[in-house]
Every structure is written in C-alpha cells, then in structure tokens.
Image (cartoon, rainbow, N blue to C red; front, side):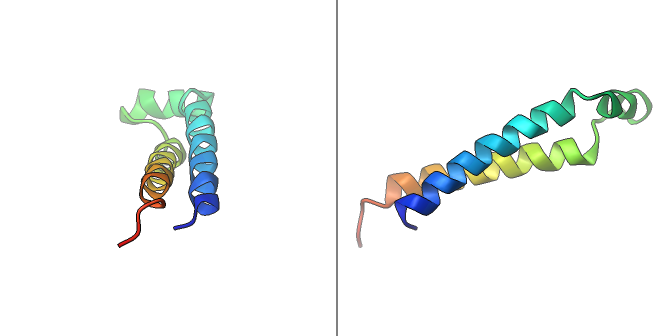
Length: 68
C-alpha cells in the first residue's frame, strides 16, 4: 500500500468515526435504544467502518517503509 492510500484511509476512517459518533448520539438512535436496547444499524456500521479503515491506514503507514 502506498503512503497516499494509507493516509486517505486514516482520514476517511476518522471521518467515519466522527459521523458514527454523531449518529450514535442522534434522536433516532436514542429512540432505537429505548425500544431495542441497541443503537441504529447506521451508527454501528459507521463506527465499525471507521475503526477498520483507520486500522488499515495505520497498518499501511507502518509497513509501507519495509520491503521484503
């Protein structure tokens, strides 16, 4: 993975985490938690996608300098 792709993954992951946090604290997520005990699927998917993208970017940054 090149550094540019890794940086883009980190930036995209952080943005997904931000929007996931906003969705997690939204009114619709609060209503969903009252009836089902869990937040909306949108909030869960945004947060999970943000974690995966950020980790992939960090792994790409740390391994881009090494060659086999």
